[in-house]
Amino acid sequence: MGYSVDLNQIPLLQYMESLKKQKLLPGRKILLENLEENFHRITAVGIGNLAELKNNISSTPRLAAFAAKTGVPENYLIILKREIGSLEQKPVAIPDFPDISANTISALLNKHIKTSKDVYNLTINPNNISATSREIGIEVNELQELSSLCNLVRINGIGPIAARTLYESGYRNIAEIAQAKASELLEHMNTVNANKQYYKAKLGEKDMQFIIDATNMILKTDK
Image (cartoon, rainbow, N blue to C red; front, side, top):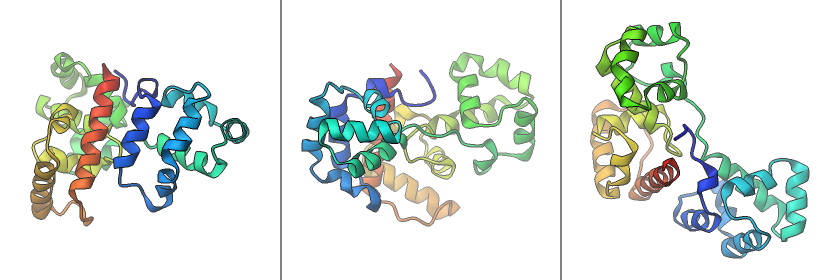
């Protein structure tokens, strides 16, 4: 159960279906053009999951060769490569999380615990939290809170501010979000943000459904 989603565990055609439901950035809406045709061309050459696809388009020469082999346009594959890359969340620096005390940050940094990935790896087993908190020199509840935040930023599209908003909304782990309804998730996040003013963006139910779908993808690959 690693920090990043396991691309080996995401079937290509399952990912194709998830793209249909996503609210893609303007520069990535090209992925919806001839979506099924392009993905079936990719599967026709024996590509079954996202890890295999990523490997085949990992460099400019490999991408060009793959485009020639499949008939999928190079510009399409370039954008697809970027979108796949967004699934593998980059670790967040601990000081980037809102409302973490300076003393806690200092204690973590003194132990060379710098990122969300560091915290996640330390606290992946909840039975270790008490001992870990004593070793670091912070309260158990502080480490539990930070552990939750560092779990939440594993979700595609969730940064430290959104993670804090989800946490304050009562969602403490990925499994709780996976079971949520988009309308309820939106209501809870809007209520928290109205009080705390964490962000200015206007979110909708489609954004919430994207979060829920992303959590379900993580849960499937965590098994």
